Length: 71
Image 1 (cartoon, rainbow, N blue to C red):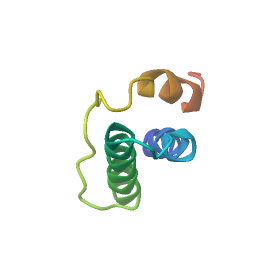
Image 2: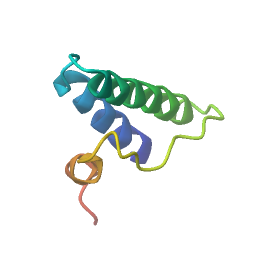
Image 3: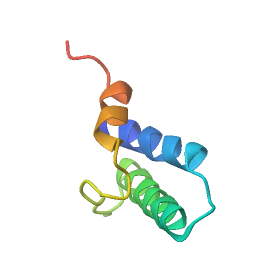
C-alpha cells in the first residue's frame, strides 16, 4: 500500500506538471525516476526510492491523500 501510494503521488506530478522550462523538466524527471523506483520496490526489486525532493513541493500533501486511512 505504501509503495502504491507513492507511485500514485509520482503519477500525479507527471500528469499535472507542465514541460516548458528547465525546472519543470527537472521536476518531471525526478517524478519519473521516483515512480520507477517505487514500482520496482513494490514488485520485490531492490530499488531505494529517493527521499523528499524540493522539486516536488507538495509531495507530502498528495501522499497523505493517497494513503489509506489508518484503522
